[in-house]
Amino acid sequence: VHPGEEGFILIRVRVVGDVPHEALEQWRTTAAFRDQAKQAAILANPMLQSEIEAGMNKSFFRWARTGPGHALQQEFWETGEIITSNYEVLADFAIPVSRSDRIQVCYADRLCYCGAAI
Image (cartoon, rainbow, N blue to C red; front, side):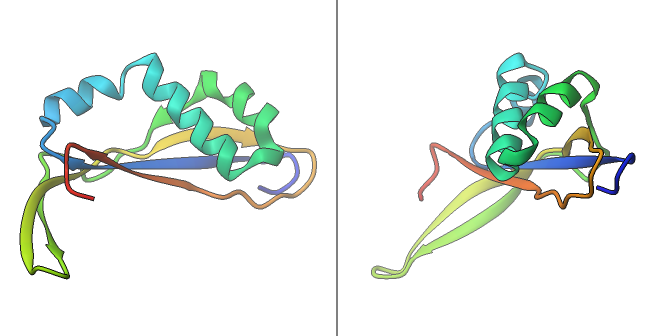
């Protein structure tokens, strides 16, 4: 982020498990999702905590190719067992931040396992 300009911290959430697409779409509209996104952004950018908290009221979802998930195959290397789970990427959540001095921001990427093999 250049001095005086607005930049964005992006949070991408990926979900592995058999969670219906509609449930994920509903979840991302909740205060709990917004709070988790804020915490992920702060964890990745602790020096920007106050800017992140200030930017939450202007946060939004960026367009992304989302939709019903894809199949993800996992192989347990010791036994060769194949496990298939659903894999879905939600739209990026953007939190605007601005600074009076130049700073590099880090993006947060979260991978959630919901009842799937890890």
